[in-house]
Image (cartoon, rainbow, N blue to C red; front, side):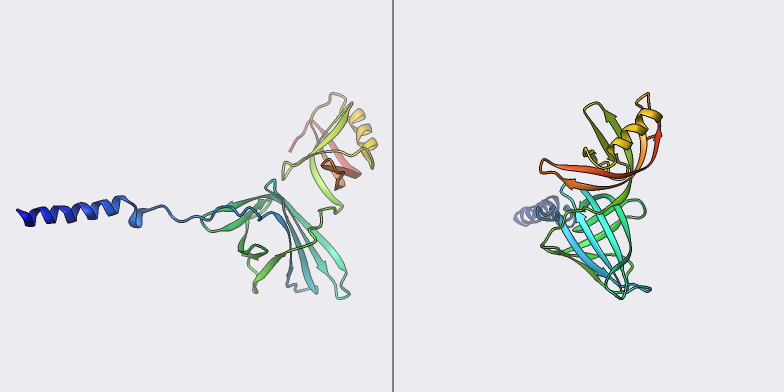
Length: 220
């Protein structure tokens, strides 16, 4: 009788241990680091240039800007390309996921100031936090939707959904003119502009340098 009671207690303990998790417990996760947003710089190898100087802006609003400059032998940029999109934190792999046009890109966080690019480069490439944290102020071509009213104008970029007020300078008058002539019904207008982002103290604004195309009735 006593032997049967001991056996029952042992079986119950095993079952209790399984119920509490064991191998079937939830996989460990890494919470989003609070200091992750920032500006990071890296250098990629290049087959037909000296190097590719890359800068990654990880914004606190879960958007990213990525610039790649193709550097010549003289140390000056021969050309540049840009990628825009959103980023998220994969808590299971402790990786940053960049997604926009094209395939997703991933980076591993190696420390508070260092990220490792998980791409198809032969050598490991690290993005190091830029202590200067330069603002993204490049003059680039944006595709988005523009709206013009009596008291202001806004532009929403297609890829990121970032919506900014348009500064009262640059080519805003030309944008208003095109809306007045081509978009009298005030429909959504798919708009391509050459522009740059500025921080006026009260927040970001878009300065339009040139209106490239405006297509009323079409959106992102």
